Amino acid sequence: MSDDSFFREVNEEIRQEKARALWERYGALIIGLAVAIVLGTAAFVVYEYWTGSQASRSGDDFAQALALANEGKNDEALAALKALEADGYGAYPVLARMRAGTVMVEKGDFTGAVAAFDAIANDGSIPMSIRDMARLRSAFVLVDNGTYADVSQRVEQLSADTNPLRHSAREALGLSAWKESRNQDALKLFEQISGDDAAPRDVRERAALMIELIHGSGTAS
Image (tube, rainbow, N blue to C red):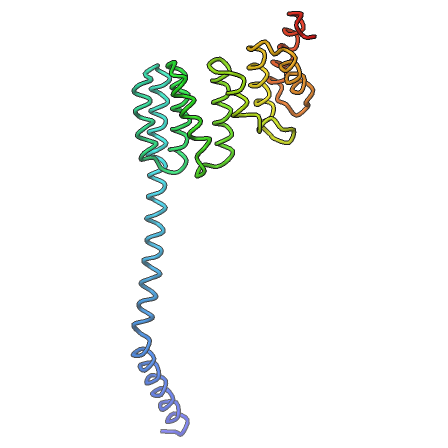
């Protein structure tokens, strides 16, 4: 045996001994890490499947509740929406609460509808954009079923020049003011909408119609 062969065999033995020593020292840790990675990956896949199935199930339940409402089965729709509010996944519980308020309006339960929308508007766990929409819904219900003070309490803050919902807020306030024969206040609000280029076209058209109606009634001055 040459010296080179001898040294190679010695080096190989040393490497094997070191490998065995390292494995005895760190083998359990390496296996643990591998298992953790596998379990973590599996958990993520299961979670993705679970969230997807939960969202899909909640979406199906919401669609069924909407179908019941569209068929005029308001009590059944409200029961389905109540169940979704309690057990739904993701955004569906909030959507169920909003839709439940609309169903109450459709069945003539205006007090219940306002209470439902107000509860959403005052729920700090819900995104502000949805809470503001609930304030608007409550205000429009109160145009015919409340006072100008009731409407103003909910949407006055939304009528500021910088608020993206100002057009709808001003429309609710204008309609409520007109209903109470506060024609000057109503005219001012509708003119604000009509003169705002950022207002949606349909809202501006309704405002223009109300301006003509107020002028035509001879009570604009």
